[in-house]
Length: 436
Ligand code: C6P
Figure 1 (spheres, helix red, strand yellow):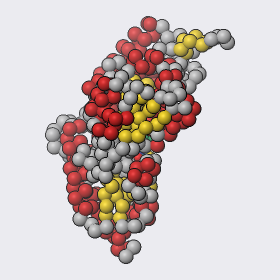
Figure 2 (tube, rainbow, N blue to C red):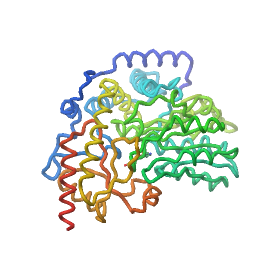
Figure 3 (cartoon, rainbow, N blue to C red):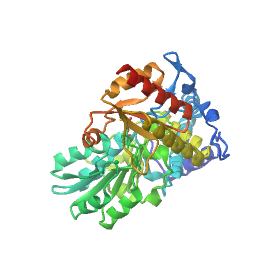
Figure 4 (tube, rainbow, N blue to C red):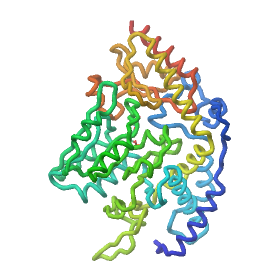
């Protein structure tokens, strides 16, 4: 690999700036949410499924991708395809510029201090594992404690359990109430001099709860404990400002943020990332290698061994441009209106129980219908062209807390409509008829 000189970095910075100036902006800010107009940006939404117009209510699993993101990926593959950070040739410089331009877009989107604090990973799961290996394995020892919450996704449970097993550390869990809200007074009691990390989900994928992350961070910091926020569901539904939250790590998945799969980000404060061990070893993450000793590159390269998912990460930058080009406040308001509307209409149906009724919720509705298995609900809805998710949502402890095996889950994005909520409600009524 060619050594990265200061001149190369200056060149890349210049090209990145140029790429940012060219960023496409395709939705004007008008205050009123024109959902039909927005839907036309998402080609996948205009198809029929099982002879019915697709009603896509599974954006919490993977959000759909707008045409501008598809076009940006095609442009890279068709005109710029090449490896990054390696070549002195034209194509490699263009690819590097686009890739680093995407990082700068991420920086602005989450308001990180510097782009180097935004490490590209393939998704939230890989991101949390990066922190577990880089931070956890280096700084957590026998007898230490890690605090997570009762509503974590498996990806913010299992890595810490693996670490606890390896190190002889202990996992502590912030409990939640029957509404699916964290009990913060209990959290405060769990913090002590053995606590080395707090890991908390921003928005629960299984319940929709929006957690008061800023407050959780402030409480943990009073005890000198860093906080990792699982932002897989937070970034699509909230404006994220990592400096305001003051979190130490914020992890997000691109495919939930209208970008391709294989993209994602670990934001980390420089002072922590600098002190952490690399995650995986290989090319691109080194300063020098001899058989006796390897020294590592600076941020973010230290954590980006091997050829990254270039097309996907460039797509993430395009998705961020797309979000920046819209009236995001109106989009988020529209999602909240859908949440309220669909919640009220589902509550009208006898036999429907909504799991997760927190005061602060995002547009994710988990529910059960009598004792009908959610997989049956999902299958019947699919026949109507309605895509929901059914199962434990990789949050089995949430299911255990509510003493249910699974839920049906409808998750709404800014491209969904009231009519789609109505179709969901009618279809649930038909499910009940079928099982009568
Ligand atoms: N939740 C859902 O349907 P990956 O798969 O690595 O991109 O993201 C994992 C993840 C982590 N945290 C939260 C809060 C999540 O919601 C997810 C993914 C999907 O709810 C698939 S299980």
